[in-house]
Amino acid sequence: MTVNVCAFSRVAVPSFVVTTLLLVTLSSVAKSQSVNDLLPDDTGYHRTVVPFFKQHCLPCHGPDDQQADLRVDQHLPNDFLDLVAKGKWGEVVNVLNSHEMPPEDEPQPKVEEVAKVVDWITQQMVRAELHRRDSAIVVRRMNRAEYRNTIRDLIGINFDTAGFPQDPPTGGFDNNGGALTVSPLHLELYFAAARKILDQALVEGEQPPSLKWRFEPDSGDSDSNRVVYDGQRVIVNGAKSRVENGFKVMHHESWDRKLNARDFALPHEGDYVIRIRAGGKVPTREEVVKSADKFLKERMERELAKKPDRDRWIRPQYENDLKHFQTDRMYDYGPPRLKLIQNLGGQPRVLAEFDVAASVNEPEIYEIPCRFTTQRAGITVDYAYSIPKELENFWFQTGDEFARPELWVD
Image 1 (cartoon, rainbow, N blue to C red):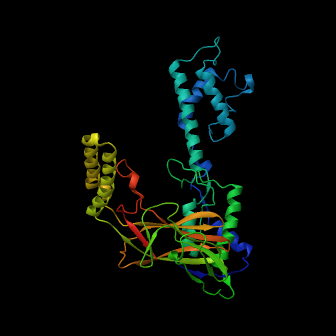
Image 2: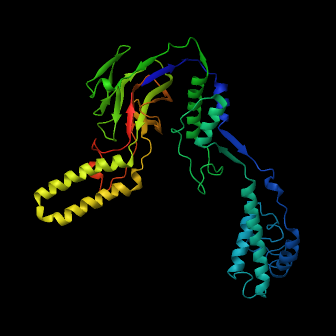
Image 3: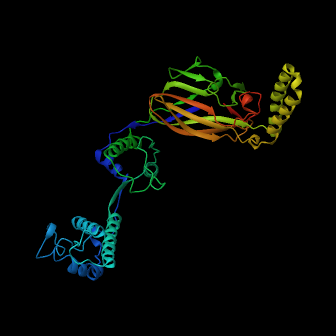
């Protein structure tokens, strides 16, 4: 594994530049229609409501008498965007629906007349509410993915937005403007992010010297193996995987099979490249069956030696288990899979996970860009080709003699 550095010294960033970058994260979406553009239904009002009020309401709620401090000719304008008027219209609907008005000692309107008035008022209230929602100005922000993509397109920096609050999903989507509200916490995080981004984008002074370290995972198989790089005693642990032709052969995932170089601190913060030379071996179905047959026969012979009288049950079990390896599609293996993990300041992070399609005879160099600070750091290579564990195979999955995709790492 080789690590290259390209780091730059920081430059003071003016506040107006930070503010400009912050504004990239926000966008205002305003409808062309204003709140006052809703036209009242004058026709329905004069055809349905005015005659009803004149006949049943005006005597008690008009110029001559204002019971309950209500005048229907003044306090109930045909304007449902007016919140005060809308509240009074709602009270009218309530008293009509509950038959509180007109009073029992007054002439009662027909049910059809009341229904028409209530329906018209309800329709206007709903119409006004929908208009208010549709015409409201939404000050929205970008979600985390949009922010990351925008910064990359504008500045060319891949900024990690995992530190931002999770975007609330609405209707199954996390980019709904109505849910992407802006809080004081968001503004603080955006200001901090803007400074970090510009610290990377705007540079001055001389470029730090190139740094290149080559970790040899076959140099040791425990944490006691320390190799000196630029005065630092770095742990280079090739674990318990076997070595062939300078390659560490990774057979399965296990805590004691990971390759890692750790306990170092790079002298300069910056963008680095991790290069891994690797290839793979993929066994055929015949090799899988042959390796499984060895395990299964050894088990059968041990059981027969202990209980020879159970021969008629033990041999059929051997045959059934062997058939599993002959027929199950999981043993039509693909290429081995590699997972690269960075540990920076005690926080692990998966940098990449990919198939290694190259063969052992013609290994390839895989490059993974990343960023390091001057905190304590480490790099781990892990085997990531998972095979389901079943009754027929779980007990020898981790046996090195069982055929499965092998990851060869130099």
